[in-house]
Amino acid sequence: MENNNAASNFIRNKIIDDLNSGKHKQIITRFPPEPNGYLHIGHAKSIVLNFDIADEFQGKTNLRFDDTNPLKEDIEYVESIKEDVKWLGYEWDGLFFASDYFEEMYEKAVLLIQKGLAYVDDLSADEIREYRGTLTEPGKDSPYRTRSVEENLALFQEMREGQFKDGEKVLRAKIDMASPNLTLRDPVLYRIAHATHHNTGDQWCIYPMYDFAHPLEDAIEGITHSLCTLEFEEHRPLYNWVIAECEMECQPQQIEFGRLNLTNTVMSKRFLKQLVDEKRVDGWDDPRLPTISGLRRRGYTPESIRQFCREIGVTKGRGAVDVQMLEHFIREDLKLKAPRTMGVVHPLKVVITNYPENQVEMLEAEINPENEEMGHRQIPFSREIYIEQDDFMENPPPKYFRLYPGNEVRLKHAYFIKCHDVIKDESGNILEIHCTYDPETKSGSGFTGRKVKGTIHWVEASQAVSAEFRLYEPLIEDEEIEEGKTFLDYLNPHSLEVLQGYVEPNMKGVQGQDKYQFFRHGYFNADPVLTTEEKPVFNRIVSLKSSFKL
Image 1 (cartoon, rainbow, N blue to C red):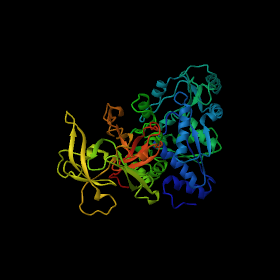
Image 2 (cartoon, one colour; image 1 turned 135 degrees about the horizontal axis):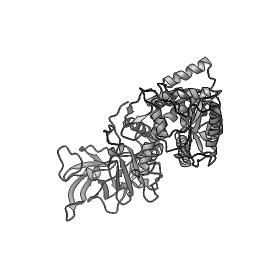
Image 3 (tube, one colour; image 1 turned 90 degrees about the vertical axis):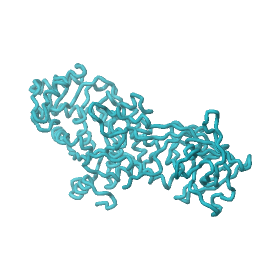
Image 4 (cartoon, rainbow, N blue to C red; image 1 turned 90 degrees about the horizontal axis):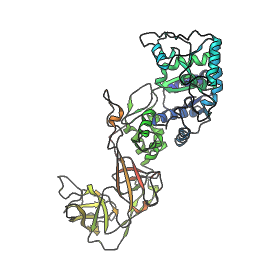
């Protein structure tokens, strides 16, 4: 039953053992996000893990929304999560909401009360925290812990009927206030929240806590392996307690793995929401964010994200993964797919004085030299072109091989040109430069008379398409946050640079999400929100090269 093509890890090995022993006939996993924000790359790791491992063993995976907190959840997040999972390339077998099970959860809470294992507590949240104790000191019993079964049943019913205010009472499990595991010190099972729920409306005013709801959801759905991140490891005894004491027929097994941490970004829905709410970024799909919608808008492909998640593997480790590893996989995915083209982001006009006026010739170039099947493209060339400002210096330093007065360079796919004049305004700013070209040096002609050391890119001026280029740097400048500071103190003020330039005329009418490799600049994606028929807007996904190696 083992698939030798899949990477071995402790979760996969456990599933193989369970299938071979006959403990399970079919694997059922789930991806259970809370709809209180947009998914990020860390969630992608969980999505890939749950769906891939079920697919490998011909199992099933449910998409389930843990919507037990109406104060933070919204249907907008539900829809965005569904879109992200589909975009990553997965189809769920069942679509469920925790709120689908509210009545059954209530009945299980009543069962615990009847068994003497739950009680209604009048302590405030602060008092409950104070009574809980510490890692070195046991907690102490609430004065309401000894209420009778009958009184607890009546109070819990009144909680459901809305007879108490928010925070006035909670339902707690009666386990062990001296347990070395703090999660077993009479955890709260239900709290009061007079709030409209996106799925159940105003039907309920009490809501189950995650630690109570989640194991019940897994058991109701027949989940065999409940895969979650390491912060839930200490919650596993409570997970098992709820399933056992609520007398659930199915008994899922919780298995923890290390969550994904990525360098130079924010990997917390709470912090991401803060950035969005304070308008420090341009919404949840800002291309600087590690949200799946942000990565999609920036130009990452589902294939690159899936490969990245598979490559980092499944471990118990807590270390951060270098963001350059994610960038490696998008380069690998696009190098054979993305058409090559030229774009000028800091334009400087060049007039080729000995080229015939009003003449435009068409040059031919491969669409992608690494993928001959993509064919060729036509590039116009004329007397006036744009080059990069960085490709010209009036007074260059030693070993500067690009364009300067008296020097000759090759124009990519075109001719050799030599600068002979610099035109400036009254303030000394360069307006344009004048060059001559050598018609014998046409690219592909086989010319061998002399060589030049510099090759620069360009765009023909008369047919050039105006374009906006958005260049990105890491959102967070430093991973080490000093005491007394927050991640907001480390936001990079230069994380976005917006430039106005030109692209080849074959880019006219580009569609959002079209991807290209711009000569020397990197891989770019046509922004699906900002691109218009008149003017494309390109997000740089990644630069062309990196020192990162797998």
